Amino acid sequence: MRRRDFIKVIAGSAAAWPLAVPAQQSSMPVIGFLSTKAPDDTPHLLSAFRQGLKDTGFVEGQNVAIEYRFANNQNERLSALTADLVSRQVAVIFVPSTPAAVIAKRATATIPIIFEIGGDPIRLGLVNRLDRPGGNVTGVSQLNNEVAPKRLELLHEIVPKATVMGYLVNPADPNVETTDVQAAAGKFGIELHVLKASAERDLDEVFAKLAQLRAGGLVIGASSFFIARQEQLAALSVRHAVPAVFENRQFAVAGGLMSYGSSLSDAYRLAGVYTARILKGEKPSELPVQQTTKIEMYINLTSAKALGLTVPPALWARADEMIE
Image 1: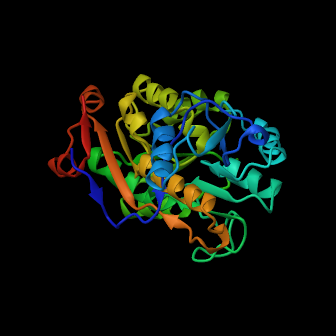
Image 2: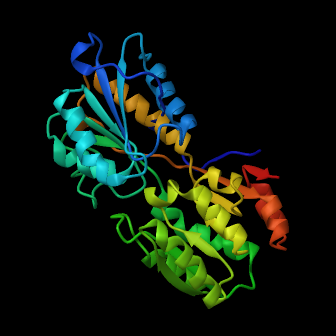
C-alpha cells in the first residue's frame, strides 16, 4: 500500500458512535451528530470523528456527549431531525453531508455548525468566505468536483479504446458540476453522456442506457445519494460489465473497478478536531474552512480481470491498494 499526500491536510475528520445522552440532562457539552446515513453504514468514519475529538481533548462519555440522528438514507427526514437537535440546544452540530449542512444552516443562526462536504461551501451558501466564514458555520471540504476529471482520465488509462462513456450525476444534488468532466472527455476524444439518477428506480434505467450506448466506462459523480448506494452501484457495474470509478474505497471493495477521491476518514477526523475547538470556545466565524487534499486510489484487481482489463504498471505504482 502506498499513500499520497499532495498537500498537507490542515483540518480534520473523525468519527463517532456510542449511546446518545439527552442534551438537557447532561452536565457535559453535547454534540449533535446529523447524518444522512444509517447507523451501521460507515462505522470507520464515526471512529475517525471520535478520534479527532480525542486528539483535541474530548472523549465521548467522559467529558462530552453526542446526540446521534440518522436519516437512514431518507433525506426528507433531515428537517425534523435538525429541528430536534436545535430544540435540545446542543453545543455544536456536526453535519457530514451537503443536504444536512444546507438544512442545518437554515435551521439555526446561533448554534455552531461544523460540516464535512464535497462541494464548494461558498456556492452552496454555507459561508461567505473560506478564510473567515463570518457566520455560525465552518468545516472541511473535499476535492470531489476538482478530481472528477481525473477519475475520467484514470478510467481512460484502463480502457483506452473506449470512445463512449457515461457520467452519472444526481440532478437533485446542489453540487452537480459537469463542465470540467466534459472538457476532459473532449481532450481524450471521448463521447461523454451525462446520465441522471435521483431515485432508486433510476439506477437500473441508467445501466440499461449505458448498454444501449455501448458505453465502455462510467464515472460516478459525487453525491450522498450515490454514497448510500455504492454497493448497489458496484453490483450493477459488475452485472452489466461496465468498468466504473467512484470516490470511495467501499465501492472498490464491493466489486467496483476503481475508486479515486479524498480520504473520508481524514476529513472526518479533521471535522472532529474543529468540533472540539468549538467546544473549547473558538468561534466558527473565525475558523477557516479547511480542504482535505489527501487523495486515495483503490483498484479491484479481481474486477479488472473479470472485465478482461489489464491495469497499466503506472496505475499499480500509484494505487494505495490493489484489492483482490
